[in-house]
Image (cartoon, rainbow, N blue to C red; front, side, top):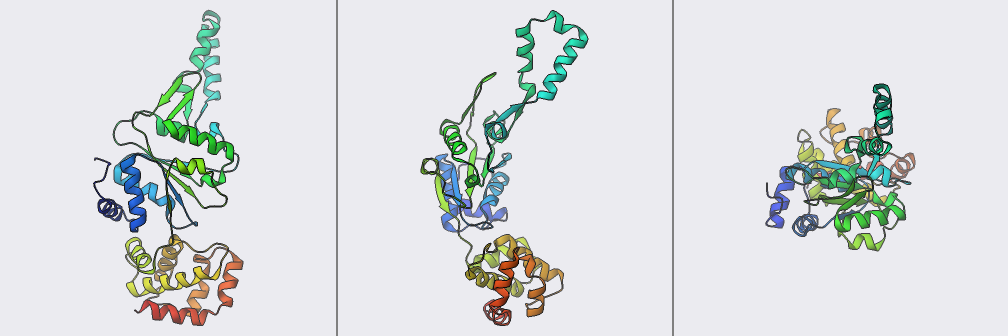
Length: 305
């Protein structure tokens, strides 16, 4: 397919066909990223659906999905490439066993060791390697966890989409990958990297959109229960929690209650299943101290509207 959409509406419709309901701001950012061939930098709290954007784009466009998970201490060897030393050593031993090592020149053997068959392509190099068909979608996930040096390396690599492997040469992407970077904002990412990208802050969905997402991803959950759960989660997010629940937790909670045979909320079942949506004991305590009875009653009222 042509992976350059004609309008924001086309992007919204295509994402919805692949089970992702984007608001107009996000759909516009995706449209511009595809049209201008620019990396898309998505920032926001954990659980708002940033990572899922890249997965959905891959399914829509048809290109391979390549994920590079960032973490403290990640460097070029983990992100770009490394040599398969065990296979290189096996190659040398085979040459010795067959007598080739004695016959071949040292330079010839060294050249064989750095053949592409011994090259392990890590996500960034894999995304820039020539490919047939649609371009890959490269997800650089949680870039805020990496250090400054790695950010600078990414900035250089994304400027011209080239990687140099000294033993082989420069690899340039014939068609640049579609790049999505995400950040949970555990620290500020440098302006230089952000300027290279189109930026969008991903908010938690509105109440009605979250209800639609639950119904889309968990169609067996009745609409009244979906609305009640979304209303309760919306309320919980306002309590200043250590880890506010994301959309994935809302879906899990609704599915859990449905699996328990519930068609509407009640205090006892909310308390029993609170671990489905809140993953820290302190957050659970803060919510229960707010008064579950009143929270459930408000959710029932909101859900019935």
